[in-house]
Length: 114
Length: 112
Image (cartoon, rainbow over all chains, first blue to last red):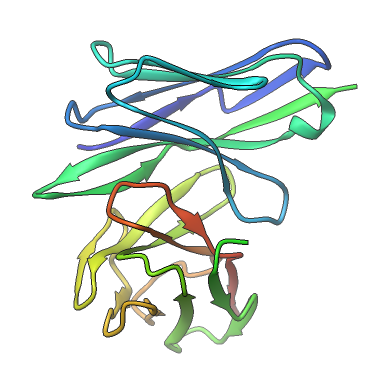
């Protein structure tokens, strides 16, 4: 069935190091891949997204890469800071008839150690 | 912060009772979604609606019902048929299906 797999489930890095979170998707027609950050007790908020006609997108310390052939995409956070600690979710748009629904991965809990 | 409002923030109900969670948006978005979040399990899609008067089941629709009579509103009813209703429920909307989704602040439902 349609699904999005996300790894790792937890990630601990030292402040200043990089963090990488990976996701794979099953629907070859997926064309939109957002990443959300959820701090404790708060709503998920979009941090970066990418569409299928682009292979990489960067916004300051955050970047996302997409490999359509392999059907996987990754979030890269450089120079991590303690305030980056949160749960991160990837998502993919899954085609249903003539529309799309957003399916989320299971999340990665990132801990940045000061 | 997004223009999408869920109410109430916390809700307690007795087992066997139906309960309705409210979701309203003033973003003029066509698409709306309901997700359930359990610890360590991410966001699972319950129902979604591409446009007013239309909605589709998500991955875990059993025991839930929705309506989309107005563009701004997408209420979710948790029925007594839902075996494990205690969870954090998130509503979201997007300008069209499959586009950037904006989330409400969530409703934490506890069934006792």
